[in-house]
Length: 199
Image (cartoon, rainbow, N blue to C red; front, side, top):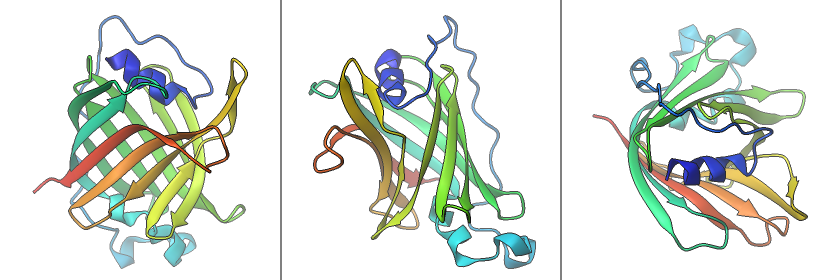
């Protein structure tokens, strides 16, 4: 089922490469204690409140993954994993380290995100152990937080992907990887991850 997950993510990726025959993933090192950076450690250039909009994500998490086989399928697969998210570069960026046992075999990825003053948006870059690469941008969306991938066209079908953090509390949240073929009038959830903060 790893192919299912990688295909789901690759729907928005610039390029995809077949996963290695022998997974070489290892769990990322633990991040520093959960929580936003201390005020005295934040660089002056990143002291604005916009740089703290994604701080809810910082911490060490257990995750439960629920992945759909394809946009038109009701076949799902489940797995568990961990995610370590920390503030880096004096509070100017957020680093994500993700590792999961499946659904089929181990897979891992990493992202870096920061607020971009030129576009007034958050920008994130995701890379993973399948060779995948996804650029995203966006920011707060009501009580949620959403980052959008670039529009794509595959075999004549135009679509766009986005990730949405919702139901955000200090100790839990939900993350969804969504796909739309009608400019977000409707969407299909391709992957859902439920987070529980490690104690």
